[in-house]
Image 1 (tube, rainbow, N blue to C red):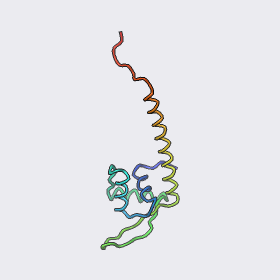
Image 2: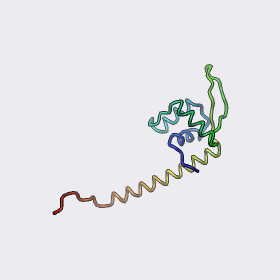
Image 3: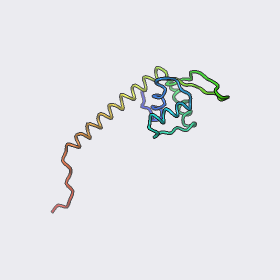
Image 4: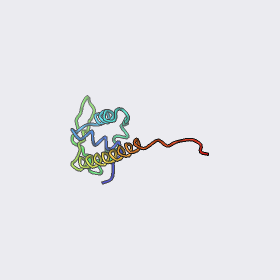
Length: 116
């Protein structure tokens, strides 16, 4: 399974606990990324189209609220497996980075200066 972009991962993760409509996804992704990622509608819907094409999400239902159509998307079982795999991949990479940083901290600092 190919790795996911950060935006795609966050969209899928935002759908992990319940179906959401577009605005709900925008706000969840912003919250999960601590406002680092602000999805525009065009970016979100292009990503949802790609994720739907890959079988990771699917439309669940349409509702009309205040005269506006809201389409809710849900995570498929394949999408849940992709989130799980990506989470494990990132956890492994973070663990390796922490180990390397710990080894670096234990090494003596390089001495800078002129020799001779």
